[in-house]
Length: 112
Length: 114
Image 1 (spheres, chains in turn blue, yellow):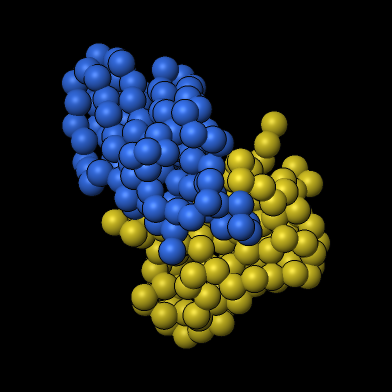
Image 2 (cartoon, rainbow over the protein chains, first blue to last red):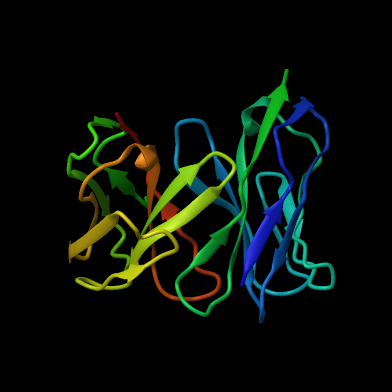
């Protein structure tokens, strides 16, 4: 079945450091891929998405590229801020129904 | 602005009690979802609904039921709460079926069953 695997956290970085959170997936067909973010005390919100191979999603300085050959959708940001501290979820939707499959989440701490 | 609200942020119940979690969305979305979120497990789908009075089981429906009498409201019911149902419960909605469909989440209800 479909699945999403993302790197375990927590990830701790200093402000202005480079961020990578790895995400790989298993799916039949051509899923859409998402990154959601959950700030403390809040629900999840969409950060970015990509709907086909080689698409790049971007938002708030974050970006991720849909790599079909490596079945990956790694999240990157060039310079993190303290306000980026949150839990990040990689997810896929395979279009076969209404379900979105979420990864386990990666907690990011950014120190000033 | 998109809005999904949940009836309680924190809830404490006793084992065996019947528990109702309410979710309301103001976006006229067809689809609504209930997830539970546990550390290390991510989000797991309990039930979803793609239309009024329609419901489908998700991955972990045991011990739960749902009700959708109006398009904007989707309720999760724990018929007889147990300690292993202590968790964060998240409601979400989306506009239509499709691979690129974004889900919009409420703030969550942290339920503790004693």
